[in-house]
Image 1: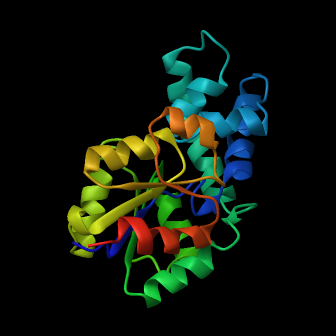
Image 2 (image 1 turned 90 degrees about the vertical axis):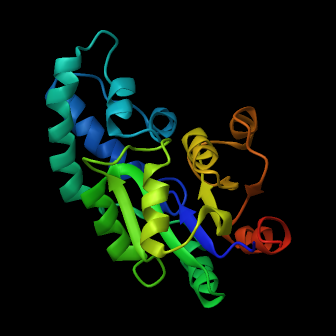
Length: 221
C-alpha cells in the first residue's frame, strides 16, 4: 500500500523550539537557586517529555517532590513564552505545502504540553496539518503508540499507509511501537551517529529530501 499519511514529531523536527524550552526550564531552575543549563545540554535533555528534561536539568539528588513543584511553574512560563523564539526550520513549511498538494494527510504528535502543541500548530501549520496531539491526561506519551494511533484515527488512515518523521531515539521507538516506518531528520536535536546507534536507517538531511525519500523508498507500492 502506498504511503499517503505523515505523522510528524514537533520539537526538533518541524519546529526549532530549543531556545524557548531552555529559557523556561532555566527560569524554573533560577527560582530554586539551581544552576542554569546550556543550549547543548538541553539538546540531549528533550525528546521524552518535560518531566524527563527537568530530571536531567536539576542537580543530582533533587527530590521527586521538588520536581513535582517545578512542573506547573514550567508549564505556566512556557505557555506564555512558547513562541518567543520558536519558528519552523527552514524549508519545512514549503515541503508541507507540497506534500499537501500531493495528497498527503498530516498530523503532529509531541510529548510537549497539549495546549502548547495545539497553539503552535495553529500558529504555524494549520494550513497543512489536520490534527495535533500533545501530552495530556488519558493518553500515554511517546514512545507508546497511543498518540500516533489517535492521530491516525482522527485522520481516518491506517498504519499501513503511514510514515513517521522525527529527530530522536524516542521517535524511532514511537515509530517502531506504532508499526510505522521512520524517517530521521538530521537538523534536529540529535546527530547522525547517535541515531545510527539507536537503529535509524533512513535519513533526511534537508526537508526537501523527505519528498524524494517518500517517492523512492517509503512510498513505493
